[in-house]
Image 1 (cartoon, rainbow, N blue to C red):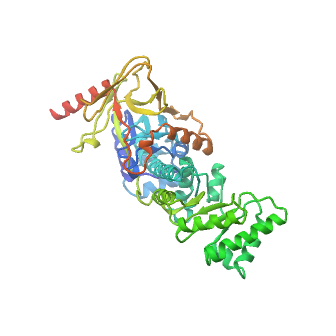
Image 2: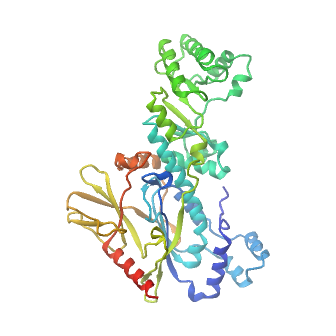
Image 3: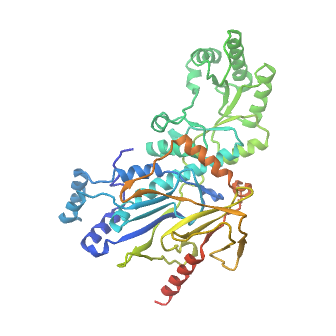
Amino acid sequence: MQSNLTLLTDLYELTMMQGYFKHEEQNVEVIFDAFFRTNPMESGYAISAGLDQVIELINNLHFEKEDIDYLRSLGIFEEDFLDYLKDFKFTGDIYAIEEGSVMFPREPMIKVIAPIMQAQLIETAVLNIINHQSLIATKASRVCYAAEGDGIMEFGLRRAQGPDAGVYGARAAVIGGCVGTSCVLTGQMFDIPVKGTHAHSWIMSFPDEYTAFRAYSKIYPNACLLLVDTYDTLKSGVPNAIKVFKEMREEGIELKNYGIRLDSGDLAYLSKEARKMLDEAGFPDAIISASNDLDEFLIASLKTQGAKITSWGVGTHLITSKDWPSFGGVYKLAAIKGEDGRFIPKIKLSENTEKITNPGNKTIYRIYDKESGKIKADLIALVDEVYDVNKNLLLFDPQEPWKKTVLKGGTYTMREMMVQVFKRGECIYKTPKVMDIRAYCQKELETLWPETRRLVNPHQVHVDLSGRLYDIKMALLDEMSMQ
């Protein structure tokens, strides 16, 4: 969580930088796109997160004396290059999809326009940040979807892959839909609600379970959520919790934010039995919270079984994205500025069709059905292309271009997804508060059709290319095949 992450890079970025430095004519202005090829978790979408830390990275991008001394000690960098690094700073432009946005494969998450030395240096850190946080935000959105509106609390800090993953992963999880986190540092840094109750050790440190519950209720009468599975959930835990709740009521304490937490056993059965006991005792509004290695599939299963759980704590499977541990974002050269000041599109070839890049200076238009507000498709276009929503719009599959559809004018709306974040090295974008990003993300998710949000075999949203961009791509492919 240090502020200067300039050396958070792969060595070859620096060796290439020295190469460009030695061949000054090669340090031309370029465009790099950061994008991903496949939705994580076999989902129908992904959620953008991490832009705020990318901004922090760029704002603090500089080489300290000790950084340069370390690079000198490697014995592979020359003094003139090391002298150049003393005054190094980012001077380019950056465009990005805003945090909390729904996004799809092959469209730029971040676009960097800068001298190639600068664009190359930030590649590794940008991907490190965006890949991790977008992965966790996407996972969180799926977990929250499975909970059908119940609150999801993120509490995986102790299982996260280190402090940064815990802190920033919790931030991303809240962006994806969690109502709060157990990580106090995340709460402090980003003004996010922090939540938590007590551990089994609290119960075990007292002479008996009832005494432990009673002591806790005295300290936290307005947030009395009691962990009931230390000894026996139905024979001991729930009856003792009910006894304490009755005493609180008799003492004139208004019961709010109170209830029980289950952390082991058959959660469906135990929650249904506990609900009966709480209702019969006169506590129908008591919360039943559950934890214990939950993920979206287990939560969905418990919902199907009629579990009476209304609040969920999700840790390991969320903060590590246990079933899908990497996001797969890449960072590819898309254009180089020519002597005439215009960008020359560049393309990367591959025997794998999905690895062939989209060339040129691009932006993304999201196309919505005007009546429902749901996403029809995304369109990757060149930045100078202009569209009139009152005219018919031809869309086609760039992999199978004979598959076409025409949207009639007046039946759809369009929105440009990328915003400018840096202009000539200066940040011109203000990151919203995390809870505001979360609210924006919820609205974004509502633009997806239910078929795209389902957890298994979701419908994939079409990401199309404009006619001009497709023609440029095909021309470059033909040109490369003739070499």
